[in-house]
Image 1: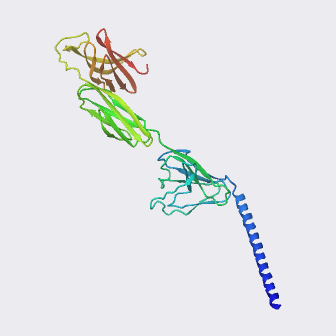
Image 2: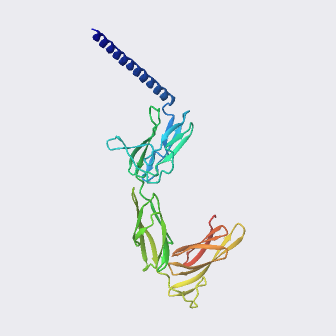
Image 3: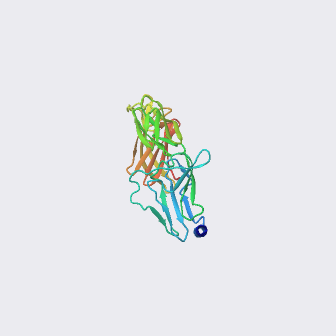
Length: 355
């Protein structure tokens, strides 16, 4: 009987111990929930902002981000280098965000702090320069910061797209030369081309960032065509068929004593003449001597064979045709002398370009 009473007493003691333990655990749980609610209230959603410098990046661009703390307390972001900063996700083909990873090269992290502290009202910037494999595919991405106490973590979304194909342009200077003369071909390429290939009357790989090349020794006379195609990850850009005209020079003229109305000489159907380039001003009743232009001409074509500007001028232009132009630059003023046929004789007219 006594044993039974002792057994019941021990049993009641154990039950009371379990009861008080359960009560203590319940009170502790309620306290933790209340404390967590207080922390959440102290860090309201939206007051820590995560932004990227672009909404759309071209494949190969560096992604940069900024975390701004608008709270009244310092927040801390873990620095997990050599693992990538923040949490990075890519939208897969099933429209599900999949977390992705990359590891920085050895030595990239240096002596960095393992916690990035952002004071109230301050911002911290970062980039993915050391993690080039994270965004090496086109698609949609999301980066997310982890801030203790926030019910919804700050994040930013952006897209990575292919670049537009290269845009190619070519220029020839001059675009008309004599046989065995020379011309400079120059090209420019946009949109980060990775390779360029020439075809037509030139060939081989060309510098994708742009460049120039002297074309010389071209023979026989005719039209030469130059094409250029350039590629990047977005496609191929073309420029086809820019043309260089190569012509036979006029035969040399020997003075045979014959004369024409302009005072030149003739041989084998060609005549030579020295044209004075003079600008006559109607404003101040004066004239400006620019220099002389040597020409040869047939009944249909005028050839510029030489230009001798005065010491204060420089010149450009020339060539051949039924009408030719030579431009003079003299002390900040620009003039153009046009030589064309008038009643079968070359006649020069000079104008100042601001007239």
